[in-house]
Image (cartoon, rainbow, N blue to C red; front, side):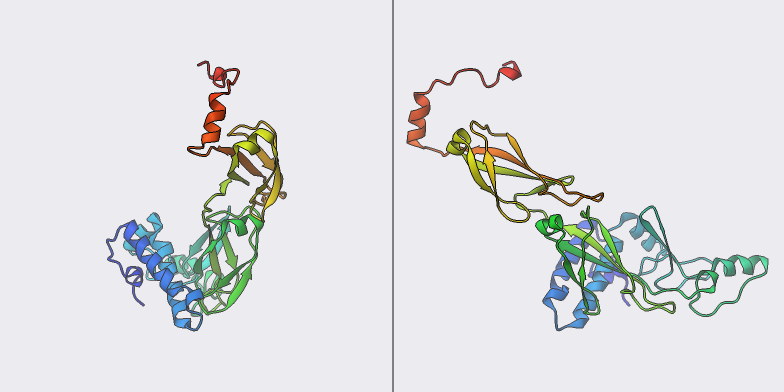
Length: 301
């Protein structure tokens, strides 16, 4: 199989921008949603995604260039040991560390005596290693991430899985699908799905809350009353207090992202008064209106 640079069609010395550009182009062409009748495209999509995952990581790329990692991102063990794919996995503190398939008992036992025989593909303690993990990137719409709507993932073998997003999901969240990786003597590896939440054109995330700048007319701000407001789960009615100014923030309870510990954030709606340009009637009104007080008094100007 071609090395990771060749998979993406870039030179070994390519910069980060060139690698990212090449991956985006290939991912768009090969995405399973666009190639439902072409399993080869799905396999190639998994290959380029796996290559990009490693080469976009500065430290891992340096290790790969030095020959310390194989094409699957697994360490190449010293003393002539190693092998492709999979390996022993140990989770600690939310991070996953992967080791090659060499048996440390064999390495040190062979040096000092008392080594233990093992069969082909055996890992620590003589156990057969699992196959390599396969990495995927899943883009999720902002509203669907906030509402935890199920997502459908197409794997490299063409199989589709409905994925339930976890509370507290954010860009970079990783989800492990056991037994959906590559084959190995000890069974299949896993699929690792990395979530990427797409930006929204008017919603913005603030922790577990969602922020929205809401344009209102001068009449709505002065008189107050109900106005229609978009939320991540559809429009609702919000009452604007009479005499509201631009910058006033109103709260819609429970309309934000689901929290890890339970409950849900809010939607914070900031009013922005929309003044029409060149409105003759409005100009005439303000020319004859002498507003009392100084709106900048609190700023001492």
